[in-house]
Length: 91
Length: 91
Picture 1 (cartoon, rainbow over the protein chains, first blue to last red):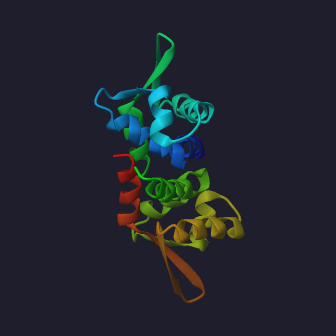
Picture 2: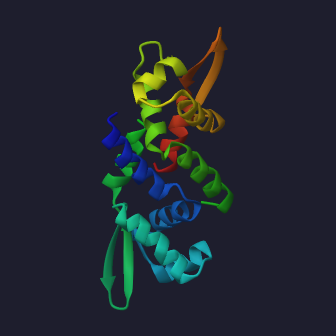
């Protein structure tokens, strides 16, 4: 593994190596529609909206979530290819 | 995902979410015998022995590597079940 590949893979792993972010990924995956808004997620993880928004931003910046604004809320869904990439690092 | 499961999974992911540790895992996996000593790994990753030993300890403490002392050197091999567990977190 090259130094550059290792840097890239480590930053992707760091994005998910957090208990709140793992619970957010798990909560979004568990939804019937495969997507959730911040309004739903604050209840699910029991944290304030700014905290949840911060963690959603880290996941979105890493390409693990896609964000779509509809009305007054942003909706988030998983990017399965990117999650598969994280698993592939250790395959 | 419960809070306790998330804490446990996050700490396992953190152990591998580091570029040097990813390169060490990759280097050990690439060996023919499936194991390597610190003496080999310092050359492979181009870092000093104390640095390499520190990262090997983090991986061993997380259960991702097994350590066996033979003669003057410690030898390290991967624990495939534990790597599979890391992948499973995001499956």
